[in-house]
Image (tube, rainbow, N blue to C red; front, side, top):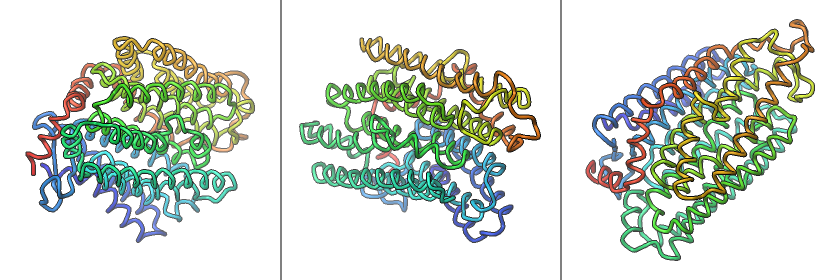
Amino acid sequence: MNNLVVFPILLPVLSGMIMFLFRDNIRLQKWISIIGLSGALVTSLFLVNANMNDGIQVLQVGGWEAPFGISLVADMLASLLVSTSSIVSLACLIYAFHSTDKQRERHYTYPLIMLLVCGVNGSFLTGDLFNLFVFFEVMLIASYVLLSLGGSKTQLRESIKYVAINIISSMLFIVAIAYLYGVVGTLNMAHLSERVAEIGQDGMITTISLMFLLVFGLKAALFLYFWLPGSYSSPPAAVSAIFAALLTKVGIYTILRMFTLVFYHHTAVTHNLMIWLAGLTMLFGAFGAVSQWNVRKILAYNVIIAVGFIVVGIGLNNAAALTGTLFYLVHDMIAKALIFILGGAMISIAGTHKLREISGLISHHPLLGWLFFLSALALAGVPPFSGFVGKLMILQGGVEKEFYAIVSISLVTSLLVLYSVMKIFIHGFWGETILSEDEEKSTGKGILIPGSILAAFIIALGLGADWALIYIDQAVEVLMNPSLYIEAVYSKS
């Protein structure tokens, strides 16, 4: 069973490499990508089942024992996130089949998506910092090409900004890794946790932890988010949906993993800083969202608000908040992919991203309109949809810790999220129909299957919250008790 841990990484990368050999056979590329992602999804679901029945799954690559070899660790947190990323990627890929032009298809869009998924899944499953850096870079290199593919002026401008900020953060990542290795002499996460606990989280290690918070914060768009609205609104809708669903979530995951497993001894410094940075992120993101009339930028600013909200839960660091954080993280990956796909379909039909020039789309596209309405409610955390449960538990965690100011900011920004997405619904779908069906720039077809799949998950996750919480609670148990992670890594050596 342990060998299954490598498959969510191996299947996407092998599929992508095979697809590079068949540049002109787009039909074959589509089939290979579907098979590769479906395989990754099936194996990740097997891992969730194995976690539930047999505990944490660990693969020591090449038989080299921890902490000297490469460890791949699938605890419930990693397995749930890999499963969610596979579902979301599959839905976005199906939408990409309908919305990607021939030129982009011939320039390796689908193989690059597979490499990006490999980097995301690898980041979730790796058990050491150096390989985390490697998987980050695989993910980022694929995203650089996907962002710039097409060569429009806007894409090139945003690509330069995106590449520059990620190169800087990667350099800081290497420096932080070098400092940490110099102090504790290991990069294996389980061993890091042990060593930091043994020597104590003194001023030097706390400073290094803040460097990691800066690095992962840049990648997750925590506070320093200025690069995100342009970068996520420039590529085609299917690519934007994958970016919004997955890329910032990898940064959030690494903050969650590092600050619950390794740097959890001085929460008064690290976690309180995290909470206030997250609060400012939510506020600035909300101001950006309500001030925009560009559909894609409204949605991009909503990505930033969600980053702040999830990181608040990590900073609060109690059982209620962490449970809410994981629930909301899974929900947000699905909901963001859905609303970006729907927003993309809306723009392709109207032929513009300017909200003031769109009106009455629901008369010809009722399914698109009502799916958008559903996803808007889910994003804002309206019951019974999936956003409600996670949001409620994070707020409960804030009340337990008496962070009333952050709780208030969270509630206010939730209302602003609802306002910003309902603004799109009311102006874009309601009102007088501007375009006849013959004047529309596209049919909007292609959203039925991916939109319905993701919407079904949002509804199921909300109505079946008690069932989902069984799995979430097991993941939180490991986060609250790092010794479970450490024992699993060493016992499987």
